[in-house]
Image (tube, rainbow, N blue to C red; front, side, top):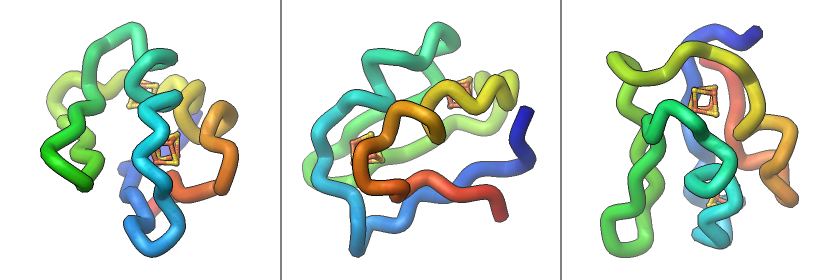
Length: 59
Ligand code: SF4
Ligand code: SF4
């Protein structure tokens, strides 16, 4: 389980792996930005584990 998530867009390569793994559809891509909808996120932490560059972090 994780706390509120942020995306480090300096590290993110917009590969969309986190979008694919999120069962809650809480992650969205807008152009070259990844946005997490906290109201949908259940804090499972799957996206943190799958990100190849460690761009998702707990705030
Ligand atoms: S923590 Fe889980 S529910 Fe929340 S954005 Fe990541 S994969 Fe989706
Ligand atoms: S998995 Fe990581 S690098 Fe890929 S889009 Fe998500 S935050 Fe960015």
